[in-house]
Length: 193
Image (tube, rainbow, N blue to C red; front, side, top):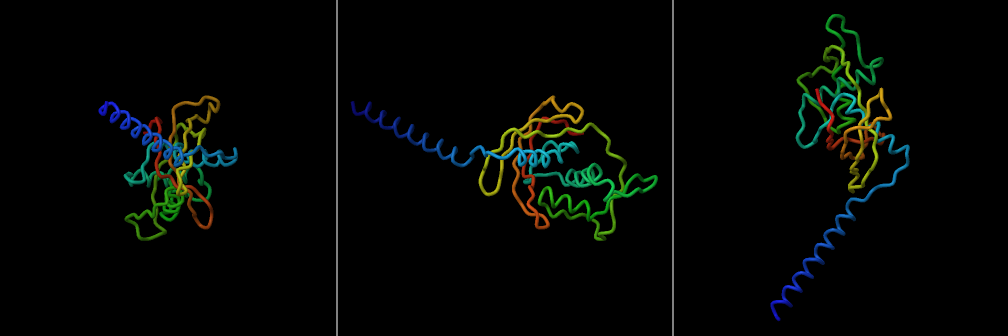
């Protein structure tokens, strides 16, 4: 009889402990109700990465060359008239400062490269490829200004056809006195080239 009572009490304690633990997880990550305008803003933010085929990223373990490529490609696609110069046969030129600013704004990384002269830059050929964007469907508040986002990919030519998945952690930040997001982690089944 004592053994049965002992096991019953043990099961009750374990069950109560599990319920308390599960309850604390629900308090940590809650679905955040955002306006459509804010969801569209987050979708646009994440699309800055997928449009340059950056589908997987982790701030704790990132490839510096891929971040540099982001700075170049992002500016080519989004700031071609203001930050990209014609370099004749070499293709195009972008200044180091413009690359570094994009990396700081989107990742929160103070990127350092081998160039000391802020007027120097990188030359590159064009970046022409299929462009995929993100449609955010759910956002969860992780606390500390971090948001966990889930969504789907879509191709610019087929906006109604959602495919794949996107999961991201972003963090609210400031850049030049403006509210921005920084990418902490991105996982997707998009194909990086």
